[in-house]
Image (cartoon, rainbow, N blue to C red; front, side, top):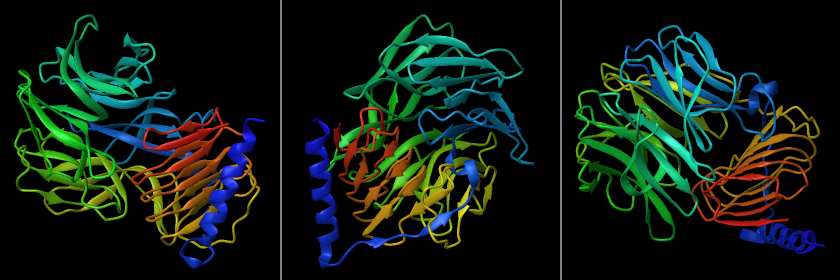
Length: 412
């Protein structure tokens, strides 16, 4: 009985979507065939202090799906050779200054791992909270990280023993933090109220709590990373709703230079030790698009090199609905589309504009992308939903995983 009002509301949304603009919505048919690799995403790159490795994580886009490739990895930026350090979910790897340890988070826990071998050690746990974005202080004596719940996050630092914790900033957001090389300042992300929604901005604070905002007012910036010499900050930057670019500026925001292609999500930059390159994660949900790649960027020439790869879609196939192996990757090729996954386990990506995504029966991954989207996932299966910029509406089951950027969520 609980599901009936939701079903009626969803049907009303479908009818409205079909009528908007006076024409029926377009059904996108761009589909990639990548096998099980289509459901994997690489993210959170972190360059080692000696420059020989980039740590990153591989995650499955589908909740509850086991895959031995999920976990914490190292990749050699010269040869692209990889090796796995941890075979369980991990996020936000961060190197200690001497390069011997990696800190990383997993939901409400902060781990420390010796890179040369051994089991991960839980440094601390905060039950019921989310821990994110660890960053070692330059002297290796403490780790800054973001902790909190959906209602609010703060930036804190804990000593290397995990026993003494202090607050660095009362308002923060789990989208990256970075110490200055001299240890006197920390850059982090904070949400502020924009014209119609809250948007992230990059803030620099000294240890006394004096702060300044790096990016211009009203523009989106997040995931800050301090250059090794302290003269520059790299961060993800959105001049519009078309995606996120990698940008570099001085710590006061002057001298801004924007890199990377538009319409792609380029995030979480990490500097090479000599300050000449940046590692970052990149995804693009359009024809010729790709999902969750680790790339490097030369900050002088602008040259980009791909280090990791799972799936790229560039060929138009008739959609083969009903294959339960995540082989179908469907994405928006226009501005107002209806994406229908049909039967089976599918990955659906909306593009710019107001899209309607319907996963259909099966365990699906649905990403609305930029624009005010409607996502239908109330099918009794365990789905994963991300929304992106814009005011989005989601109809989901109680077992579904729904990201924080979904504004209106109705669950059965």
